[in-house]
Image (tube, rainbow, N blue to C red; front, side):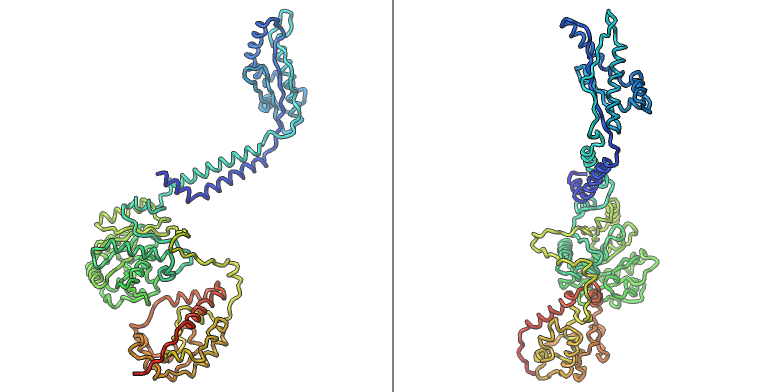
Length: 616
């Protein structure tokens, strides 16, 4: 791994290092508080010779004493010196246990011996140190060589007797804190390095392109768990939706030599979000007015019908077995202009169906009929459906989830596609971290969300939430048979006071309905029939006498007397259901419920006066 990868790993898992450092510091402090305080008393002894009148004799005696200091240090912790101390002080211990509590040091090139004794009782430590010093002096004078006159040649003097210490020598709280901090920092860094070495997931675009060897066409931002539906429709002005438009533009450059484009969208392992990416990409392609078809060719775990809300009982498998034609089962998804071919019943032999001659003929006819055909297929590591289908098309678009797929799995997918002769158009990195650069030109800051406790305990509005749905136009609130003109809109029944946010209560709506009941269409002031939208044509035959506003119509349901529209004009878009779910969300506040209505009122007030038109 390179240095940049390690730095990226530390940027991703910096919290591991911080937590480990804090834990190490707290551990050092805790050990200092739990440990039993130990006190150390120190005494110093000076060794010298008792004879020598000349300088030469003194020099020789000093050299002899220095050479003997190590021997005197060993003698200080021997049973010969410690047994008298134990008997004198009445200690309940052994010479070996007592020697472990005694420390002896001799500074270099000196005849001074420092003797330290550690004990939990400071007074007892001082007594033991002084007793050991006295016993060592006696034993040294006894065993040292004798002079001619029978006197001792080595004299031992206590130059610093031990005193009871006031501060404990251990634990050293400051030292333990520093040691815990350093150990925690090293441990956290080790965890990050080991995690980076052992974790083989594709964490960045650089790793993904290095493993696959194909260009990165786009990225898909990580979305919240509560997000429902494609982001291109849910939030078309967001950065996440712009990412799909950039992917669309890059894909157009890849297929610049062909007027039509057909490709599969696949991944390495299940759960990488390929179906949702295929749906968003198809919507982005359909925004430009192209004739786009999305085919759910994942005959094992189809998801397109669930995302779009379209019926999936009949679809691709129905066409392949000859029970229907493609024109019979292709559905239009609402007002998006996107055509969808669901998977249909799940067959027991998906690979055989996808590799059949009927599938090849269907693919050929769909590619010639539509400008862009997007096939959502099964993951590559599990089955070979994507490779079978991609050979019939222009290539494959590979989706890699940076939090799920591992490098060996991605390499295996690329190897399988290359061996199958499939052209890989590019790579899409899913669940990437959204950009938070506020200096970006098109940065659109998100509105601050209210705390969960405020949303939970906020007062609920008494107005039915469906009365202010932002997707319901003004026209469905009146019977479809009525053609509302500019004069009718300006009538007293729909004044500005009745459209304000404060008047959006049940009583105000009832009064508005009663005032709008006697309204009838004015044929002499209605717009010419040829200027009316095509979808309003079925409303011409309805009687004008039934032009009433019922409160039941506010529930986004057509009146029972409404004439049946042509099935080709019926909007089966699931967006209405999605908005109804949002409006029925108990976590929405009153201000959030009234915001769409206020916006609609403001828009109506700003409409310029239209000139009256005369009937030709």
